[in-house]
Image 1 (cartoon, helix red, strand yellow):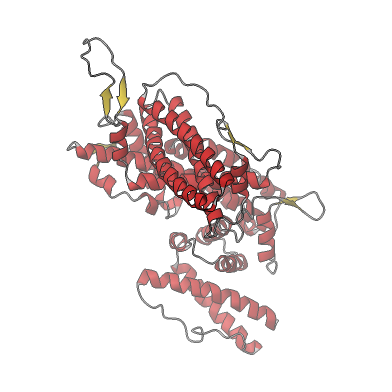
Image 2: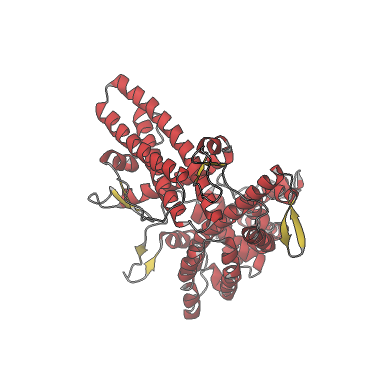
Length: 498
């Protein structure tokens, strides 16, 4: 009993410390702690431990009332120790408070733990139960271990059936390409209703694992669509402001001005509860729809006539982009956005290559084509020394980035051709390609610096591998330049990159 009390007290002390630090940031000062809880000691007698636990439970109930899910969402960052999250999961599972606020907190914490495994890719492979028939995800196994000393609630056949609905919902969410369509589908309230219907079974490891997996997949899709919509609105606003305009459009009878959009902080909105932010998300989505239907100005890169000779009034001279001017207008935010996408592409290809059969790892299936890797590129994606401060790590990192840029360019070029009937979609893919050309130029410069270092060491094989990857990027960049500066033409099928 004493050991159990010590273990429980250690868990609660971890939660207490996290909560108090969180509140201190919100009240900008110290939080008064009840007498006897300022410094916890596990060396107390059993009676003293019981007394301390009693006071701790009362204090945490008060802290739970003070801390909202939105506060917890903001507090859980990449710097948060996973042990804190595990302690909070134990705390919520022990309490098993059925209120929506505490269920939302458990939802947030378990999703955070899913997003931040101790080992990258830890939750991606699946295992089997001891009887060989019940498939268990690694995350569910981890939760079972975390909650080993907590009596798991029952999971009835009805609840199992409810959990089976999350996989189709994940697939449904993945199909949406516009924020407005996702919101109009009512998938958010539908999922919330499913979670509510689980009752106490929500705290079962199997339920938590299923919900966390869905949350991560849905959150990734939602964030992408929301940021895309917000960025498009901001581009409209910036272009309108340059021409002296002020009112973007009317949403629900209210004029939305450039000033309103300037105050829009998309990243902040994504960090508050979906429930409380849902109306704000809807307004952003409606505004984007209004702008698509009736744009206040034409949003397009500067265009010039393909010939300086005079044309007859009834002739339709093709328009081409002033690419140098468009590149000069690039913002650091656009470059940063592309860098983040490239990093995700690298991680995705790396995950495939590392687990693929050696015979097939050089052919990576992409959305529109097969990405064919050279032997050196495949080896780089399998390397376990990328974090080293060494020349070999530098070579591998450059190869990864060269491949990622080629992959992104190929996808965006195909998307540009497929968007021939949508000016706004063409603009988005055009912006991405212009940014990728600039990123590609930077990557090539870095590759040349690495080659220079290799030449000093006489590493002919590595130089040849880098040069081959650079040549492929140069060819891809040429296709992008031609695609941007040529008039729109009938879409063709993307070819494999190899």
